[in-house]
Image (cartoon, rainbow, N blue to C red):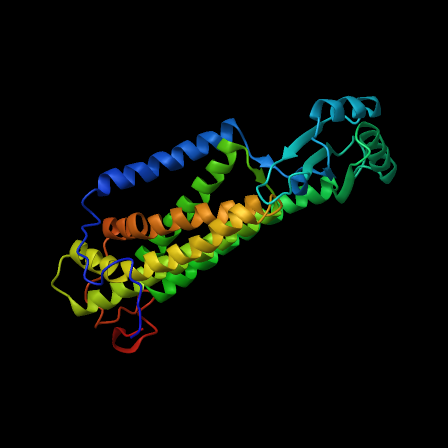
Length: 326
């Protein structure tokens, strides 16, 4: 006999609008707090965006950050940050640190001679220390990367809004974009609040969040459009509730199984990919929430066309369909 796991029954009748003022207000509050965190704390840009050199060290003896800093002081390197890295996957005698050196004035990156001098200074403190990786990025390149990252996120949002507008109606497009901005902004706010490293991998995670969130939203919108054609006399709010309840099992199962894999990566994947995995994990949680409580609330507020059997030549999303069918 086949075993089918169901986290949510098929016939739920949850009123997702019962607390709409609370959930909408909660989302608005989180977005405002995220903007404040970004303005007050700023993002903790990684070496990709700041320019400079990151040296990863590994040693069998415990790391003395003060001794590391004192050994490097005679080199006059300017802004140097030393961070000890903790990870449950490390061995008992594996001690890891990251030494981040900002780009020097007038230089594209830290010179090879300087890197050798740093390594020699640290080996005087601890002869067991090794240097498994060294990453360098010039300030000019880092500025271009910031610009490109912003363009990539904006381009994805514009392309998605056009796609939703053509496939559905402009009200759906506005709802989807508001939900995506909600997801990206709050995720960046969390990064600013906890000063989690924000690098190119995090930008890739944000784009992944955009794709995952819009996929979830489109599933709900698709069922909503079917039900709008099926239940023409039912109030719009009830049709939306019905559509979310009908897709709830799929939403919970998809998000739940994805989160299981991501949490395993978050715990066991190591510090190198931790900020990337954290961004996707948090984004999936907030993206699932927004597809249920933000996107459709915006559509309800804007209102939609109810009779989909009569295509409107002036409206996107229907002018390409015969008889209003997708």
